[in-house]
Length: 300
Image 1 (tube, rainbow, N blue to C red):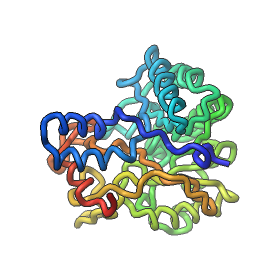
Image 2 (tube, helix red, strand yellow; image 1 turned 180 degrees about the horizontal axis):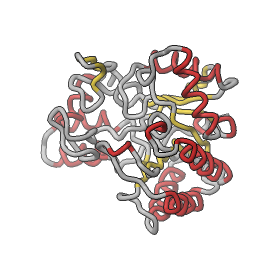
Image 3 (cartoon, one colour; image 1 turned 180 degrees about the vertical axis):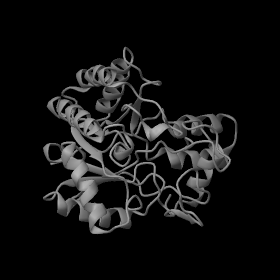
Image 4 (cartoon, rainbow, N blue to C red; image 1 turned 90 degrees about the vertical axis):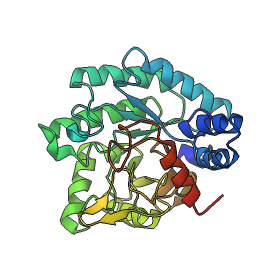
């Protein structure tokens, strides 16, 4: 049984949306405060990176986050994001070399040991694996890290891209399933889909179920943080970087239906995808975009 079945995902009061909501309220911007409070309801997973939470500091950050979650009897959800050659040199480029990555991982592992945490290991790492210098090395590295988190008691999920990542043909589905197997998916909790993407929940559940069938029933979780209006499709395909007109998706919750374990807010709502469509650099708070996401959400 998933940890999420008995303890909801942690909703930190310190997400960008939560901090901004309190600031707007003190400034008398009541309409903005209402929308920002709405966006803060889903919280966000805690992302760990080589720049924001590097070796030497990441352990303390994880321990503090876990303690906060445990104090309100919720499940900490962590996203390690520092794999070598991260994001294939694009907007979120970076990551550690292999030796540094494992030292960083060990520090996280020791900080979360016994905490009943959920770990979503390295978004895009398998989607972009064939662009890595040696894909097999990435698979081996991810498997080693995944098993280290598992041995510490974490519930670990691996990257399966999204329903838009592949052409839905049997060869493509078999390809991502093979990458997942090589990275240890059958030895951990399962896989995740749609992280930082905008595909509808229905599309992601259908996609997840098809991948699950290839993996003897492996379970999966879906990022619903920004998928309330689905994806924006332009002349060149789906717009993935700060697409206009999007909306917050369903709030995080345990689902437990077939292989679909839960919906989570993994992407931190309010942070830009990168310097595109009028946005600031990746990871920078962008309040106008966040207000739009909250305004267009169909709930609350």
